[in-house]
Image (spheres, one colour):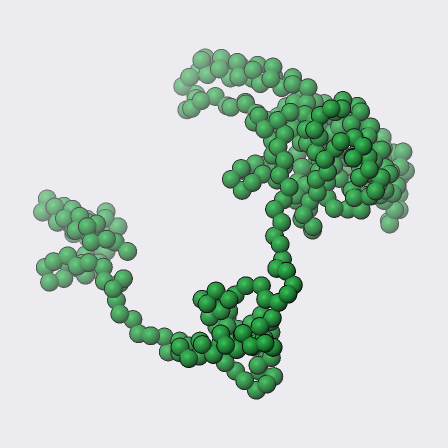
Length: 349
């Protein structure tokens, strides 16, 4: 809707253009309206205001009467219906030979009377907020998961246990076994913990809700090491998106044997080469194309300074080729796992 002051201003501008020799049609096109609209605005020689907000419209023929709305409320609050939702009340009434209103009408009327809440003794479902953790340096938040790896014949799988550092994306621990066991997970966590020198630091270990992740052996190991466990919401796999993204990179790596490994030893050798490539050679797109190991050890600072210097010199040689500032090579100082809605973070492996 166009306000009355805007209409007056538009008509004034069009009249000035016409008085200066412009065609009325072209002036209306420039204003984004039609000649018919201009005529409707200026009927009887004066600019009319938009009457749509004040228009009197006929009542809908199918509108419920007040007594019908009251009957809906009274029916929904009867002892035999007060614990049921409208989706069950309406069919139950039909079984008794009664029709008061549709389900949507029941929902709408109850909502208007502030009665469309969880009904009955059972507690309303709780919408869980995902666990949110922040890392500002390596060794603060780890993500881990297990993925299957095809074996020599159909139906036989190996299981890759893998731990990823959230801040640097470096793989800090992995093992390949023929079973999913909490004992194997505990063994892997303990080795990575000692290798990375986490003693005395607060470490969060995030995973999904699988049985190996919540087995007694692993939970006891976390308790002994002083590691805080963190878990996905039930049936929400993307709460552990960094690990899932890494597994996709792993299985789409050129040379990955999609038809299966001939033996567990061959699979371990392949994973060993992948981890070395990923940590020390892979230019990670989520890290502005430095390797996870460079980010993990702090060598990324020198790499980024060198890139900034090279770009600054390139711009100085040919400033006419640059329409703006050189590329920003700064990495964020903090990385979030399941960031809050106001923290936008793209996850790439």
